[in-house]
Image (cartoon, rainbow, N blue to C red; front, top):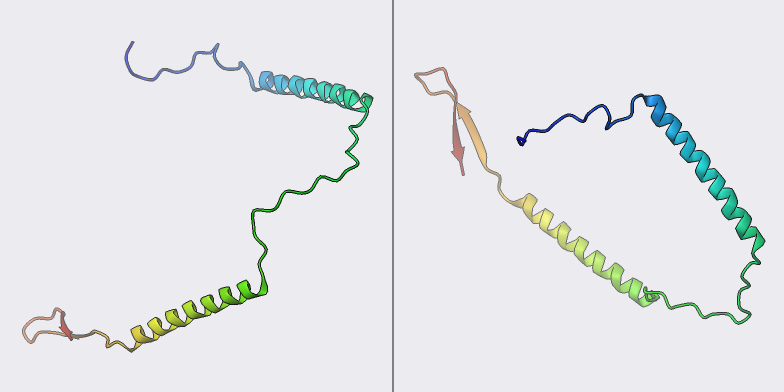
Length: 116
C-alpha cells in the first residue's frame, strides 16, 4: 500500500444524515430514561444528614491584606508611575533627527540628506 491517503469507504460513514439524527434522538431518549432512573434512586435514599458539629473551614491560600499593605502597594505603584513619566519626559526632550529633502540641480528626482 502506498503512503497516499485514501477516501473512507461508503460503509465507514452513515448512509444518510437522517440515520445520524435518528441515532442522536435514540441516545437522547436513553439518557433521559437513565436520568429519571437516577433521580428516582436519589429520592428513595434518605438524604445524608450533615454532622451537628461544624467543621472548621480550611484557611484560604490568600492572606488577608491589611491597610498598611495596601498603602505600601499603592506607594510602590505611584513610584513606578513617576519613574515612567520621568522617562517619557526625558525622551520627549531629546533632539530629533531632521531630514531635508531637496532635488539635485541636474536631475528631477528627489534625494534625502540627513542632518544630525
